[in-house]
Image 1 (tube, rainbow, N blue to C red):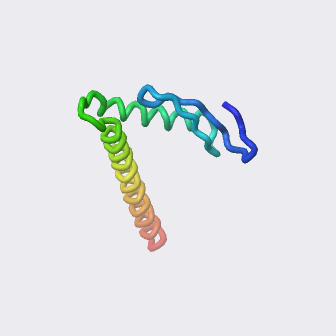
Image 2 (cartoon, rainbow, N blue to C red):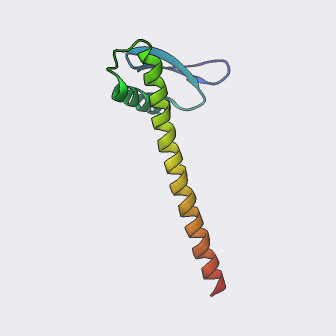
Length: 93
């Protein structure tokens, strides 16, 4: 890990057997957690012997993570709506 002139941290990670240097404003632990998640998801889709499999694996990984994100956002929005409703009801009392 090192910090560049721009203040961003450079972290070496391994994803799907390849090493990458990730430069980010996030701290090292967070960057490593993100890389570990991507690596774990890519391994779920690995084993496809077709040509261009890496691209396919990357796309499936991105779709899987995007789906998780959207589901999480929907849950958070629903919780916020429910809490707003409870607050409105409490103010009416």
